[in-house]
Structures are given as structure tokens and as C-alpha cells.
Length: 151
Image (tube, rainbow, N blue to C red; front, side, top):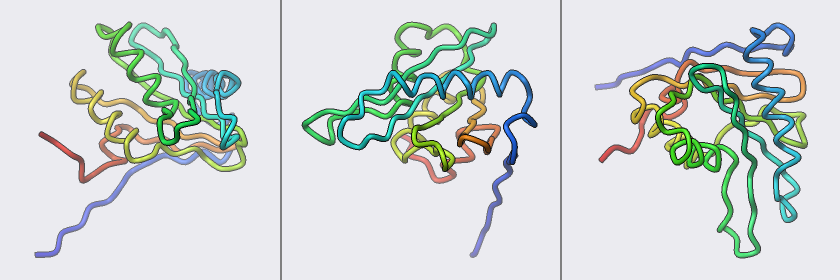
């Protein structure tokens, strides 16, 4: 039996059209790109999460000479949040990169980690994937990984 599903998302062709709180989160992610350690790929990624209560926490990707022993910005951020801010719910997470001409989307491992975080906190996390001028927003990480791993 054939089945289908559709994905709902918001696309902003101008960042100024986004809600103020989301724009601030994108800007925090963009600023976090300077924290990246990416001497091999020169692809610097920043991630910023807005926690319940409004606090914003940032992280960046970290590469290693013993590739693939590096870590994407999203997972650096999520693991830090789980360890240091575990009692606070993540409301939204933005991703930005340098270079920034294309929107920055999470890899498969990050998509699963985002979904794991949603499951732990039992509420969705808005994901904002941005470029220099545009952004795509999904209401939940589950949207990015419809066929997810589950124990």
C-alpha cells in the first residue's frame, strides 16, 4: 500500500520578515560561527538555542585532525544544553554558517540528535536554518527526519 506525507515549513526570503525573536536567534548563531574550529573544511557553523525564559546559548563546530572525529555545531550545543541546562526546555534552535550564501541544514546525525532532544523534553523544537539573506523554519525537528531511529 502506497502512503505519502507532506512537510510544512515557513520560508523567509528576507530575514527582516521573520519574528524579532527568531531574527535575534539567527544573529546569535551567525555570531557563533567565529567560535568554530574549522581549519580543514573552512566551513564554520554556529548554532544558537533559545531556552524557555528567553536565554540564548550558542556553540560552534569543532574539527579534528583525525577526521571524522569532529562535531557539528548543533550537537555541540545540544550536548552542552543537556549537561548544563537540562531542566530548561529548548524552544527554538537556529543554524548559520560561514560562508553563508546557502541555508545551513543539519546533517543526519544532528537531525536524530535534535529529535532525541525533542523526545526528552516532550515538546517540539523550532528549527531555523539560515543563510545570509533567507531562512527556512520548521515547527519541529521531527519534520526533518520523518523516518527516525527509535529504540
